[in-house]
Image 1 (spheres, rainbow, N blue to C red):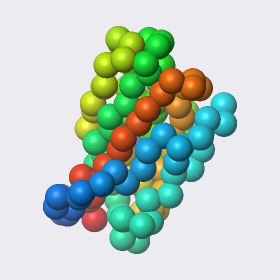
Image 2: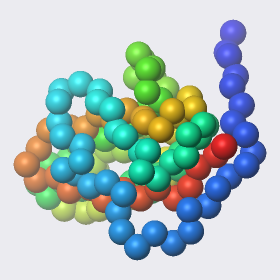
Image 3: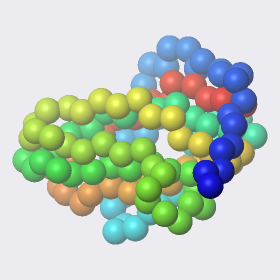
Length: 125
């Protein structure tokens, strides 16, 4: 049986941010899932966040960046993006449930040649 949780239909559009909310240096590689604090932009009680993720590796392919609800222990229910071509930006819009928290978790491949640029587009309350 599949458990279905619902997200409120009230979407808050952030508007037109002029800079990134987090970049690669905000997401160090730890070899494990790590917390990403979004409290500077998200209000308490947020149900899900919509993030525009742009990233690349200037040398390698098949690098990955993943986002999931903080506290999840499995990797099946997560948003992910892979580099498919070296030195080409990959862009994805991801909706990540927050479980009412102002944090999500991320995992990214290690690499000295990576770049990332992420913007919070809005959130659901």
